[in-house]
Length: 185
Image (cartoon, rainbow, N blue to C red; front, side):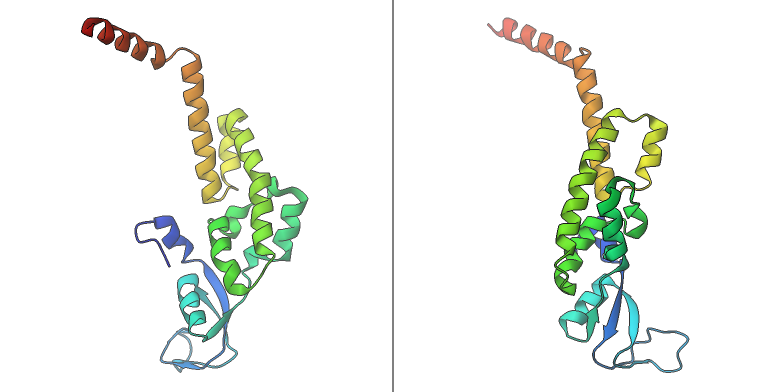
């Protein structure tokens, strides 16, 4: 499941998922306020994704589509994807969507992820290249982890390009290399 050293993947696996138990389970102690350590068939419980996935593989539970991928989210993304706060719904929206889609049997999650990413990607790059610091910090609060990484990479590449264009280290390195070549000839 999780890539051993990838902290983002580990955190993604901690997302909470609603499940319905298909088999009774005893000795699990999911609800501390319950007098028994038993979960009845048909019980609705919220579990971390990693546990829900393992239980689903054993056909003990069935997973519901998480609320971060429900019809309301889909409609908001279709209306104006750049303004939707995906981070508050799921910080790892795209990664979690890719993991959960085949397990819940929802064929509409894949196209939702693709359309959201394509439209938001353009916005992320545009804002990274043009936004001032105050606008940028406001913008970062609604971006998912993957989008934040893209934003920071775009800003870094833009800063490097501006430095290069202004005659930064490229001339110094070239002149040093030129001297070395002349001395060796």
